[in-house]
Length: 183
Image (cartoon, rainbow, N blue to C red; front, top):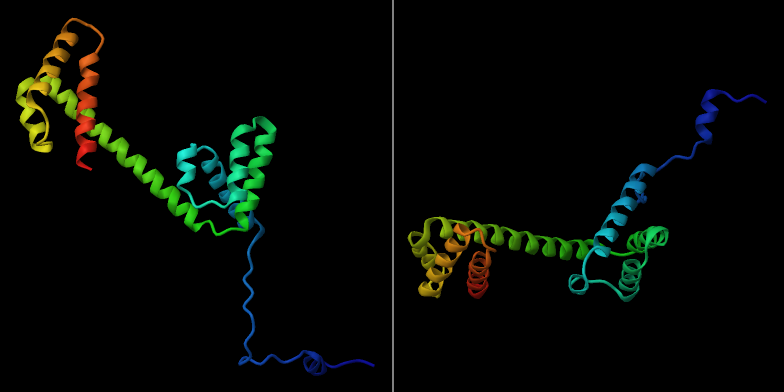
């Protein structure tokens, strides 16, 4: 018995366009691997953090224990533990963790930026001497003019005599205390 082409059409079930069908989203194998690698990188980033920074992240007990263990392990065991952390992250909502990590990085970047500004201000104070003191007083009204001038003079003397820059460092510390006092 031979079928005609028209008969083949009759064997195919008709789909009703009005039916609610689940939409199937096809994800390529490469995309799955990229996502898994990104989660492993996130895990590695968390493993590199210190204890205080980890305390600020929203981690459950199992994940935190795995990260703590990974920080203690060396070589091949560490790689396998990183794989496990990546696998654990696949079953969790990582968005809050990523958000908290971004906040930590931003805070670090802001602190680095502040330190660079303070270093430039310190260099300017040592180069220009008493002429730059009003700039510091404008930025930090609570600054002690006499203490600042004494530190500047000592730093200039140390620089001229090629001595250790003790006062140079003290100026930076003093400026940092003033900046932190404003926050």
